[in-house]
View 1 (cartoon, rainbow, N blue to C red):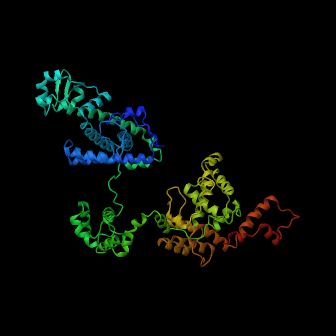
View 2 (cartoon, rainbow, N blue to C red):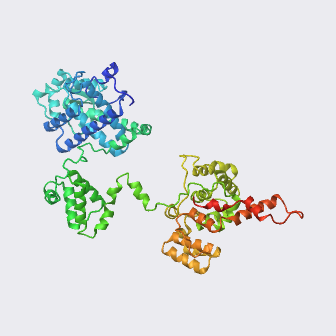
Length: 617
């Protein structure tokens, strides 16, 4: 089926052949071009028709006049075909019979796509289509019934008048509701008995020489059996080809929704807003509420509480009958505070209603752990830190989480994804360039079980990705303390996370002892950890490792820890001097003619001053 354009106005000969009868077995799929709007409209209107068929079948006997009259009215209102003759004349302000048959044909195949997905859906669809077919076949004149049978290769032989006369008594005795007078008016069909097993089982037909003599009003049983078989096979075939259809992103949401779509009146449009007072609800619940809502109202009045499912069901019902938001808030608050819920708790109870606003939900979810400090995604010190400095800096200016990751990387020559992200973004934040980061990670990984080729294939992409050079080109920001603490806790074999939050207290104590922290300081840190003050514990670690009584800042980011450490250590002059001097000593070995020390002023100029590298701008 194609969906790109509008249908052709001219009726082709092949389409005329397809729609030359008001009833069909839907053996040939439609080939028309239809718009998505028409696709959805046809599907919803046929679904309305099938829902009506289901409801009427439950409320009335399917062959009664009342059933037929109500179903005919639904056919007329939804513009589905029920006339036997085909023409292309439009009723003033209405739809031609040809267009109705075309709609009937296309809509059937659309619902096949929606209802072929599970056994329960297929069973429901087959049952309603069969009831619909039974009604439509039953109202056809005898001539058109015979035409339908011949058109669909159900060429059951019509019993001649002479043979009916010869078998008159036997046909009357075997067929319900026939007499000698009515026998003359009835058509009989000679059918192989195996095609009429249901009728044979209930002894409704006369058998002779392997053939069943079926009266005209019973032939529908055979036709329905044939239709059920065809439709069941067609649904199974449709289910196999469904993935190809669902790959079309225009159709997939429609088809997924149709099988459980509500096709009745839209009650989300509040026609009676503010016309019902809170004082009326008790009275209305006894007079006009359905049993489900009457039950919920009674439970609310007795218990002064309903769980989430009840609040949603009853709350939306009350909204639909006309309660305003202000009335609803007053109604629920007044009832809940009679129980165990105070007014403040009611705010939390009403939060789901606020979160349903897609504008507010992401903002509210993010606020509770939002980082509102300095933006460390802006690299102020790009390229000003060399790879040779990292080992020294990790012991002096890295927070414990990053020091832990660095040590694990040096020992194991590998970090899992969580560790690479946390440590890699931190290194990016302190000033490593993409080229430096690639060199740093590659040189470490190839010392382990990863060769250079595997590194380029499996790991290089993620490093370029965190620098915003791949994928969505997002320039990722280093993780804040809250993100490290609250998201992605480490599992066995992981080294990321916050040591104060995720480490066992005894292991944390051993780690702090290995870093020469005084016992009194360790006890202070462990007390803060016990009280779940993880950032304060890290700040105390900063004070103890830098020998200061008060850090003078509130710690909320690992990169902030590094920056404050560099400020406190005088801009890292000793670190850079140590590295550069070691490089110079390798390039130019000392000789007897050269002074053992360079001019201090000259050395300072050559080595530069890192103090400005870590100043806030």
